[in-house]
Image (tube, rainbow, N blue to C red):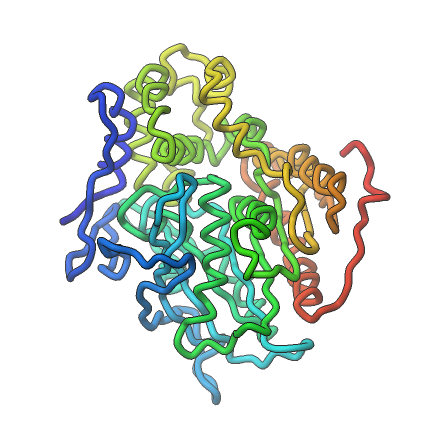
Amino acid sequence: MHATKRLVATALVTAACLGAYAVPSVAATGSDHEVSRGVTIPSFYNPPAELPAANGALIRTEPLPLDLSLPGLDGPLPGRATRLMYKSTDSNGKPVAVTGAYIEPSAAWSGGGARPLVAFASGTMGQGDQCAPSMALQHPLTIGSNTVSIGYEDLALYRLLAKGVAVVVTDYAGLGATDRLHTYVNRVDSAHAVLDAGRAAHTVPGASVGPDSRVGLYGYSEGGGATAAAAELQPSYAPDVPLSGTYAGAPPADLSVVMKGIDGSGLAGALGWSINGFIQSDPSLAEFADTQINATGKAALADLSTMCVGDAVLGYGFRKSTSWTTSGKSLSEVIANAPNVQAVLDAQRIGSLRPAGPVRVVTGVADDIVVHSQARQLAVDWCRKGADVTYKPMNLPNLGNGTLLNHLAPAIADQGSAISWLADRLSGKPTSSNCPTMPLQP
């Protein structure tokens, strides 16, 4: 059975008209493949009908060939990869199958203690299944008539492997696994997926990580929000996954602010991914979509549900949400006047809980996509709760408002320092908060 993300999104935004909410089913197992925008999705990504009880329990694994790999004396460089599917729990308390990858590094770990593990949360990849980070490891560049997918996170991931750190990558809920839409920037879904990836890594056949391995989290942009949320929820959701350090780069901590920065930018399509995901998590929002989003907007939501970030930039970059709403107002304005929808965004706010372990928050001062002020506010909120926060504002030149460059440049400029900071935490080296000297204004 071939079920596409476009079909799911169309069902979501029209559910209010039909008086019901349902996600179309897909094949659970077997040889059938889903095709998303001309890209074949292996049957591995079709979840089974029943899932294990334990969070982080492996459902299935298979070898994953890394396209960017070289032969080495002790095995392939930078390591040997395993595709995996594991069980997690979504924001509604329902079981969900999540896919990802574990990479056993060829390099030895030279830091203190056993080989550590980093749960890696990728930045925005899209909402189509073909955009899954685990697929990008096998196919770093996919360019076709209907899709553009780039594994831009591979460099940071490989730098961690070069240090002898084992890495587990999550595809998040619904990105890869074909039974639902990716719940983009849903803090609970993404946090659980990250933490359960850490659990799953310990039982991957051939993995060298174990109970004595220190665990760290690494993420930028969407990934920064996921790791920030995971650090907050770890004490209650995964106390068995103690965190030695968390890197949260450009975290979208306040979605009400972030959506204003995204609207009309090169990443405008991300608004559609957010709407699709939140309607799926909260079916009561379907009525909002049906009454407040016009035919153009509904078509865009369905189209975006199958797209990767490259497709979205080319197809919907610099579009304004005023063209999607029945009132002609921006989505921010419409949501501000819809208390039930605004409450959903408010519940996504990161910063209300003290994170576990040391955290490093990095944000570009000129970042106008994941706006600097709200990321900095996260660091302030955490500091006020007594967290061990290393805060670093990146003062880089303005490279063009709305072009994504102000958002991407800090990730590249800080990558080496971020990985070194995290490696130090994984080695057991102490760090100290710089909150007392943090300025009150950006």
